[in-house]
Length: 197
Image 1 (tube, one colour):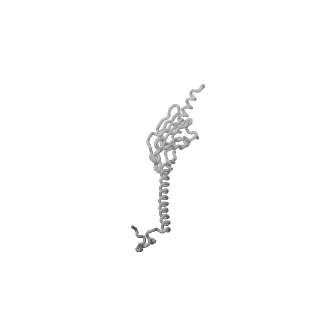
Image 2 (cartoon, one colour; image 1 turned 60 degrees about the horizontal axis):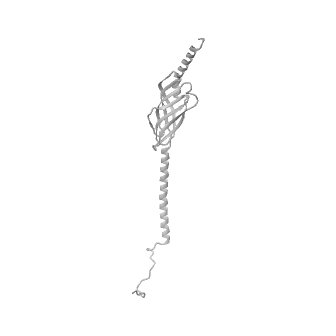
Image 3 (cartoon, helix red, strand yellow; image 1 turned 120 degrees about the horizontal axis):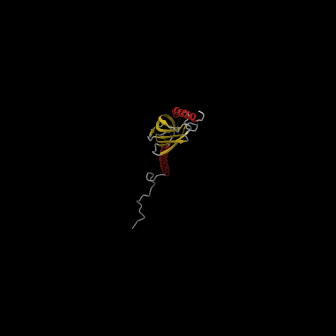
């Protein structure tokens, strides 16, 4: 049996150490929110930095210029074949590897010989190429559109097209003498074949 008239019991008292006052709860929740916001901000910054790094690694920017030409020969149809080099300058922010080069337009063709070239940002490399020029039409004002197969820093292959001016280039200067010779020979043959000579 329970005696409800027991007077020796103490009434329940308010113990400030046992219960957290409302102001402390608010401060505690605000601190938790602040820590969460800081961690979230750090995570977002890391995500942005990672995305910027991926974009930088995927970016490809370059310049291509005729660098040298020599050797080869001229055939009777007026086609000059040379071996040469294409200078490629990496103007992008990340290293690239030039894997292949090809270009064609009426009267002119360029093909890489198969060697790849690694270029650091701001670096220049020389790609070995084979050149084919039809003397009569190759060196007009129209540029040669060269397609470069490039592997970016993210290891993904990309195709980059660059217009190379042939008129006045090193390739043109190396082709002038053989093409002039061919033109003189052709003119001399026409004079011999013409009636009344």
